[in-house]
Picture (tube, rainbow, N blue to C red):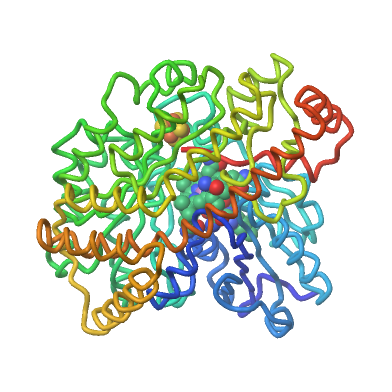
Amino acid sequence: MKNLLDNGSKCLIVQSEFSAFSFWNYVDICKIAGAKYPAAPLGLMTVAALLPQQWEFKLVDANVEPLLVKHFEWADIVCVGGMLPQQQSMLSIIDKAHQYGCPVVVGGPDPSSQPNLYRSADYLVQGEGEVTIPMFIQDLEKGCKSGEYKSGDMADMTEAVVPRFDLIRFQDYIQVGIQYSRGCPFNCEFCDIIELYGRKSRTKTPEQIIKELRTLYDLGYRGHIDFVDDNFIGNKKNVRKVLPVVREWSEANNYPFYFSTESSINLADDENLLQMMKDLDFRFVFIGIETPEDEILKLTNKKININRSIVKAVNKIYSYGIIVNAGFIIGFDNETDQTAKKMIQCIQDAGICMAMVGKMYALPKTQLTRRLKREGRLFENGSTIRDTNAELDQMTSGLNFITSRPRLDVLKDYIYVIKYIYNPKHYYERVTYTSLHLKPVNKYKPGIVRMLKTVKAFLKVCIKVGLHKATGWLYWKTLLTVIFKNPRAIEATVNLSAMFIHFHKQSEFIIDLTNNEIRNIENCGEEKYNQLMIQEDRSSNARKKSLLTIVNH
Ligand code: B12
Ligand code: SF4
């Protein structure tokens, strides 16, 4: 075998395919916008920056281009990594690479949480690459042909490298991610982030962030940047330091980017921070609302959301020009028959268009899982999704435990919520509400090429949504209302309206899937179903175990 540390070794990095039906894979909308996929593979671009720089790299994202034989024939070594929904595709890439005689390095979120499944790879690199990739390289130096690398240490973010953004074609994506921090200070019972990345939010320095932005700028990227943090405001003191620096840089460069991120809801309490984000043209924030019911929040220890009006908090954020996308969960222990109605009311009253309503999932490294195990309620292998493991996300899978309410009630409530909120009339009511409450700054101004693309996309939306019998009238009514009452928000209105194409398709898929599950339970009876699930777990294999790892924010 060739000495891989030689100059010019060829390293093929593969982003494997995601499931087509994920809430997040709004590929139809990408096509309208002239792109191929929502988000660029930040993890793998970071990995490329951590590997020997004398190597020659090729990054193939199978979500935007076919992975071909010639790619494997070119490569001396193959790196593959990703999250749970990519598990099947990652495993098949390992096999394929071996067919062509390439050693394979595997890493990333799923191989780190389910290492057993990935032992077919030659090198299994767990955890944060900043810590474990150097261990792998040391082994290569020693000529090791295989190895496993893990560490209890967490990466020092102030030493993080600039990802190899040069390895992708920007036009393939709607957005490019950068990461400012890892970890979150809160302590929600169902969350694995705090156990994987810690409760101390580790941040990069302002200089590092500017360096990343400058790199993207110099490579010609303009437009949407997503801060992929677990909780962007997890370390408020540091965020307050970085935002003004980024603003100064943005201003000096004529605002080449606009931003989005994930944050806890206490963002709404901090007008100063909101103003800083507005000044930088933040346009979206994803917030884990989970449930509007305080009793449930208490049990799940999501204290930061308790004793507040969600509607007021969301409105506050809209007033700074930032659209709130949110996650909700059904399947908490102390839900009642009023839960679904309260959730719907919260989503409608706050006008949350992109509401990802998922079923509760007990993740391996969480307090929730440990409690359910103690209570004898955990289906260790989460095998509720055994027939559809290619379609994994929070909406298609979940409830991998004996629910406290009858499971059928939970599932029926789930369908009720999804049907209601993704009914065209109700969805467009929310688009109108958000658009009228939004005060965008629109500091980022697209160049002429992007402008033409935007106009083309707008016309496509007008045809696809505006001429559709289910949405036509609602779309034009919403559009005209916003043009007359809050014209600055028109871009947001069109974007949110377009997203309905994806949500409609995706919600129908979810409803069918959940109805099948309901039929199965009705056929065998709930008690027997639970018994079967628990028994099945006792005799199940490692592959099924992997189906557990879905997360909520
Ligand atoms: C941003 C984000 C998203 C974005 C994705 C944007 C994008 N560009 O892909 C969105 C919102 C779309 C998303 C969706 C989902 N996400 Co997500 N997401 C994240 C988040 C917050 C950051 C990911 C990121 O970019 N990190 C920054 C990069 C640099 O880190 P990284 O990718 O982990 O890579 C590092 C290491 O893992 C390692 N590494 C990675 N790959 C490889 C490969 C090799 C060969 C090696 C050696 C090392 C290596 O080195 C890198 C540097 O340290 C993480 C949480 C987190 N803190 O990581 C969750 C996370 C990745 N998501 C997760 C999940 C489960 C999902 C969903 C399934 C949830 C859902 N709602 O249904 C969906 C599925 C998406 C889909 N397309 O189908 C889980 C994955 C768990 C698992 N076992 O796989 C995570 C870890 C959150 C968690 N609580 O556990 N997500
Ligand atoms: S669910 Fe969100 S707010 Fe709660 S601990 Fe996890 S990352 Fe933090």
